[in-house]
Length: 196
Image (tube, rainbow, N blue to C red; front, side, top):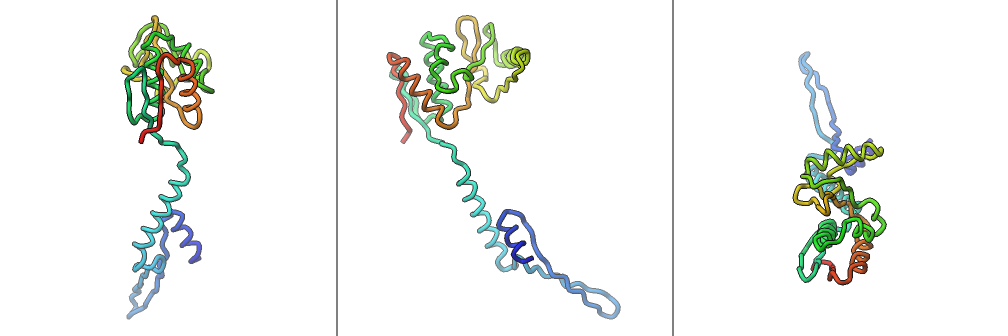
């Protein structure tokens, strides 16, 4: 039992063993309660050790690449951007240079068919969310605004349509898309490097 309790404590489950010793004194029953695992003298130390181990396990399982990037877009430098912001700013810059969003999306690596959602008209975020949900539901899909740059300031308007751009850029997809955008639009001066 002792081994099991120690293992459970190390696994993050707060469990204690106590010894109950009853005494009879003149017809009255008294109970002496003593904590035996963890020992009161080392309980605080064991809690600190267990917390340290938990953090180490969490660090080992979190393999996300959190590298920030500096990007240059037509001579303007943006520093220390998370990957999702870096690619969004690149996409937005290309739209502002007059390139149609669907033509840019073709060069967004393996995710090219899932990076954009659009609706007719120039609308605000609230209307976009409603209209996109309705349109996607008719096709048997859903629309989750949290998976796109879909706040009012993030919407992209081009030739009578409103677009939202994906914010889901984990794994190698980000770099493949950035390299492809750089190569597809060489005259747009797109550069990116890890931040120092």
